[in-house]
Length: 255
Image (cartoon, rainbow, N blue to C red; front, side, top):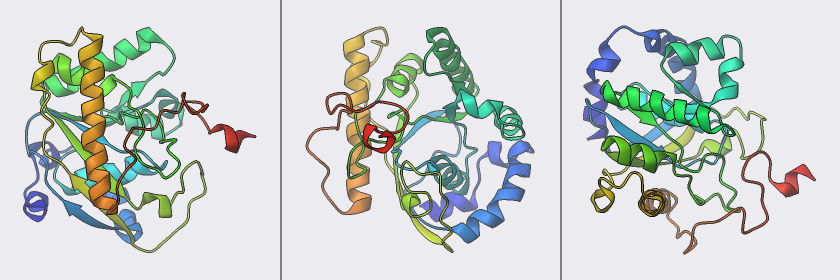
């Protein structure tokens, strides 16, 4: 199924765009760096929200290239600070990525509006529900933020969970050091759309948004269990309850 999807790209990938330039530069290098094993497929047309696990700073590259291989153009909700980097910021803006400010409520509302515009035009947006690298000691998914659920309930479009594993061998968690490995194995599983029908029309309800978030994180965790061949902890890790900062480096690394 995944092989068929890669051979038949979506119209948005076939259409000339800045993605062509980025792919021409990046794909040869990525093919040397990673060897993908992809299970599952993505819709060739139409909007959806893709929700991956997050355990390495190189995750967006790993997930984005996986999405490209499956025939879609990857668009992320990304940290706003990345848009201030010369060249990188220009590429992010031109390719339709969505800047996210963590601290300001007005900026967050603007980010949600931009993401809604992407899905309204039939595009797909990638949202990391955890909001940052997982703090869970063994790199299992942790408690999620509500952005993906909020966007899904407002727009009514499908949420598709995805899990990747292997990126930590190239860029270990909480480290900026790049470890080159020729064709490092990357496993990727794309799940089925998550059934959020019980929360339909309840996008103003905090209980519904929280419930949808828990369900999204649960489906991501199931895929991570499958990809790792192991069982995750019974409850999602909560960094606050474990005395951790939610963003930046964990306390033990800062000290």
